[in-house]
Length: 311
Image: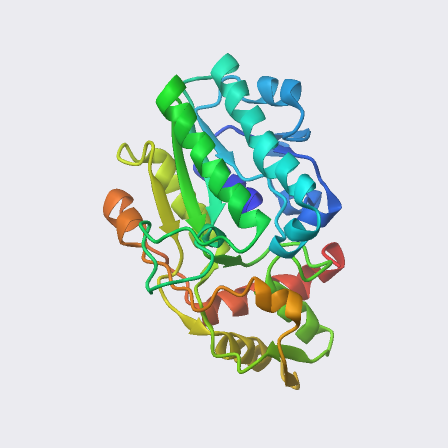
């Protein structure tokens, strides 16, 4: 979702774009995401764990957006070695490939709000303690440390972005482990009820994918971001039940149900989360532009047209 949106944005600005994707079915790789620009980009089907493929792909790149990941925080606790393999070894591969083949590129790594884990205060700034509640969060934090180390040790121009809760067009919709906002849109479009755990009062920061893409580009182009870590979110805390209500309102007849928290989900529940985006706004001038209401409406319009391509 995010990579293809960045690719569309870059092509629209006249950039020469290469996309490398393993097209692993669990993680959203979908050639349809690129169908409108496929004749204007170079596409490489390859895995971030394949060093030789990466080494060739990074040659000559001015900017590298490092987005490949195992994306389910729940699955990371069940299959920790898979998460380690993709989210740590894979990114060390990329960094080593850049050391050998391209030390001049500016590299943007997408981390996650899950590095913060249990939230102690809101809005959450970049100095918040790390209270990781998942292997996913631990390995994303390790990724940030790798990118900073390779900047300090080898002079690579790296920056890390801690994303809140991205949603929007082009996200895979085959299962619920990728992004809850999009998953609820699928359920609503299929006429299924939307389930709220507990009271649904926990606040979340939901960020539209086009805003994420623009933040990544701003971070890549800014001279002030090298070696830094930034939160990327909307800066707004929306109660979970309100997000659900927005989805339901766009699909008339959608039922909302409330149930108790399942034990496995409650363990990794972080509490309220709102991004403090002051640092990235001051450094780059970036600000999110899409409200949750408008983003949900745009996303539903997309899937009404293309649902056969996503589930």
